[in-house]
Length: 144
Image 1: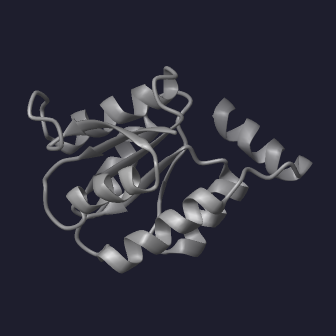
Image 2 (image 1 turned 60 degrees about the vertical axis):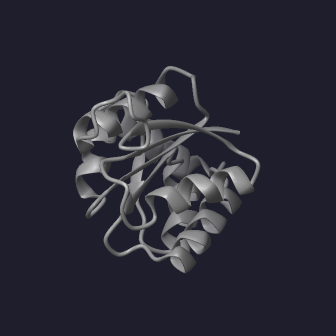
C-alpha cells in the first residue's frame, strides 16, 4: 500500500516509522523533515501528506509532530481526510473502525518504538465498519 508520511522533525520514532512501513511491505511517500526538498514545518508537511490521500496518490497517510495535535489539525483541514491522533493500538483500531480514519496522527514525544509497532498493528488490522449508524456518522462528519 502507498502511504504518505510526514514529520516536522527527525526525532523520536520519525525514522523508525518509515523503516517499519517498508518492513511491512508498504511504499512510503515522504514529506516534511523526511524529504530534504520540502519545508519541514508541521502544517506544511501534514498538509502535503493529507493531500496525497485526498487526491489519490496514497491510500492512507501518517502525520507526526511533537504532540501530534498540530499534525492532526492540519491534516483534517484537507477535504476528504479523517485524521485521528492515536496514542495506543486500541485507539488506532477504533479510529479505523468507527471513524473510517484514513490518516493516522502520531506524537513524536510520547510514541516509543514498541508502542509504534502496536499502533501500526491496530491501525492496519482495523477496517471501516459497515454498520448503518457508523456510516451515518461518517457521512455527517463529511457534511460538516
